[in-house]
Image 1: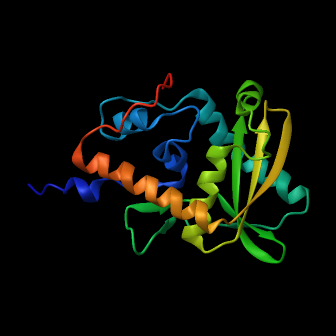
Image 2: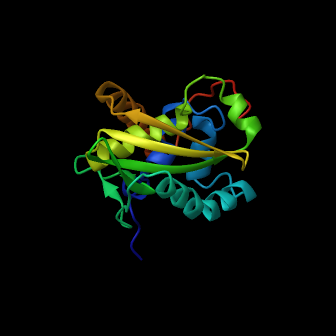
Length: 191
């Protein structure tokens, strides 16, 4: 029997970047660590299922609004220097004459209000966008969020080298907790 070393088992992607970095208001680093190490089972929620089902409709609406939408590679992207850093963008979109990342999101109206940052794109989606832009070599991301099933909000995220470096550093630190099988320090949140 071949056992895969723990250092090769754990990959981190854009979808967990905010939690791994400790900036996700809904999932702490401790909760993510517990999920990834198998200590807590997180089943797909009904909201997650609806998000997957609504993605083609959101993409169709973007096309209707004049955006050029292109498929992203199914195999996704891997950082050549950090094989543990991966990403699977939803799509590519033409933005200002360049290929950009396209992300489709769904969010309940109460979660949207809880975002509270005042930003057009919530912080966890910004973190995910930065990682995907880093991996795919893009400079912009279009984030289309269906809020409360009733309103599509479209925002853009610009590539920020400093943000990417900080996210990667925090994600590498989190991955070290996974590798050592030691939880990160709790942050005092409900999660």
